[in-house]
Amino acid sequence: MTTQTEQPQLDMQKVEAFGGRALGLLNDAALVAMLSIGHKTRLLDTLATLPPSTSQQIADAANLNERYVREWLGAVVTARIVEYNPVDKTYWFPREHAAMLTREAGPNNMANWAQAIVELTKATEASVTECFRTGGGVPYSAFPGFQKLMADLSGMVFDGVLVSNVLPHVPGVVQQLEQGIEVADVGCGSGHAINLMAKAFPNSRFAGYDFSPDGIAAARSEAAAWGLRNAAFQVQDAAALNVRDRFDFITTFDSIHDQAYPGKVLKNIANALKPGGTYLMVDEGTSSYLEENIDHPMGTLLYSVSVLHCMTVSLAQGGEGLGTMWGEQLARKMLADAGFTVQEVKRVEGDIENAYYITTKAR
Image 1 (cartoon, rainbow, N blue to C red):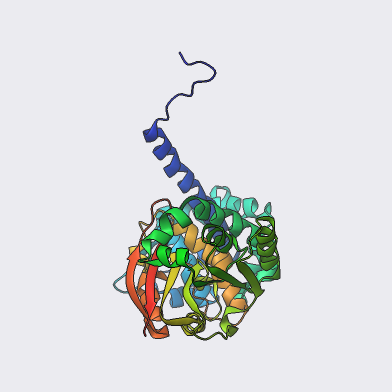
Image 2: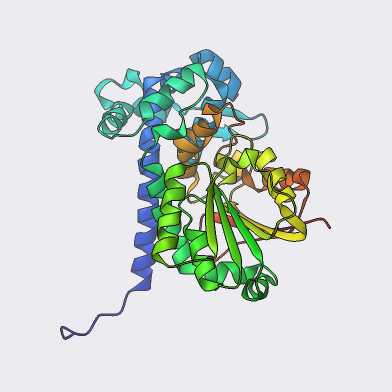
């Protein structure tokens, strides 16, 4: 029997089991939005009438934009709703699944219930649905709560592992930070990562760049509250960053895949680094190939987030629409094209989502 001051020990097997269930809930919640879009655009109904088909064939049959259809297919394939053949890159909707997710199912159409659930939310899903028909994208301004959401999500990771676990993975950087170097975070959001590093390493100087005035305002407010004199923030489109050979160390945290012109941003980062400088790119730890993401524990969720935010925000700016699931193979190529040498790609305990690319700029 335990007293009021005693706490029973955690059953770690139960913790891990519930953690898996919680992650499954997030995947399934994201899938609800995908099923709603599939219902509204009649993608599910169209798929049910087709033989194994490519994303372009499916998009043509549904009279929809292929890029959106392809990313949506990633979500429903990883959810095991649609099957995928990587050899000929075709998709197949099993009849047994269609029997519960199309208008032919009548009152048993669960996709209709998915639509009802999404309609009760305050998301911009309706705008994204229109993009399936017309292309283009939904601008960042349509997501007024996203900045705070990302600050909350990333803050949990930064507070737990950034200074104690992430930075020590980068060879020599902790010692350099202690001695005093120039550091930048590009796409810094609300600036929490910069402020944490500035607080931990008072001899170094830190700059944060982000195109969101609200994010920069939040970053400056936190820096002031913490009494930091070595952190500065600037509203800046990363694609227009024009800095040469200034920084010893540059970081980005889950921001490259959101960019309208990620290749240009990576080149600007290379230009801003001093010769021999280090760039730490933290971004989604996925493959560039759908078939290798099917067993990813967050696959459905990440493809869905791509459809509903990351890809569409980029396309709204006339950008490349790289998407959340751009993957390691493409990331390595783009880093090399920008002038970086990838020294190592690491995983960090406590962060199941991201890969940590440790790169250097040629001298």
